[in-house]
Image (cartoon, rainbow, N blue to C red; front, side, top):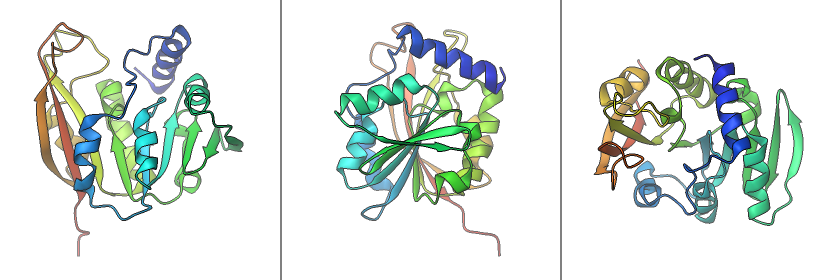
Length: 220
């Protein structure tokens, strides 16, 4: 699947209201493990493919500056509307930037986001981006993410299950795959692995894994 086809797939899901992946509160894996990133107060965190995630609200509540990127305008408008916030909206290259308080979201295709628009980031939190992409796009996504932020600490949530049991998304991402995407830039540490209660979509056993990605020291 190319980036354009993938974009159409997700746009149509939002238009049809197929948002069962949306969680109404902050993910407990985030709240348990954010400290593993050892971030300073006021750190800038990038949340790719953020949807209308309440994780951003929670992170902002902890004093962080949060920047998301989301393909669907529907999701971005609903996010700020649900918070009773009227964001400032400016054109940002091929995207639009919505901002209110310490939260801003770029609306558009993440592959159209460039470092000059994003600005410096201190960390990444990826709960639903990597696992939302088919394998052929994960390579491009991982490389693009590194080009956007450089190697900064990352908290990453993945799923591991028998892909023949369920087509996805969300997709299964094995440890071997994860190391192939990020191993040249990061040390990967598994912080927690837990079984998905009732199985993924009630159909197949799956584990949800939380990883800390720590930047490797530069080569001397």
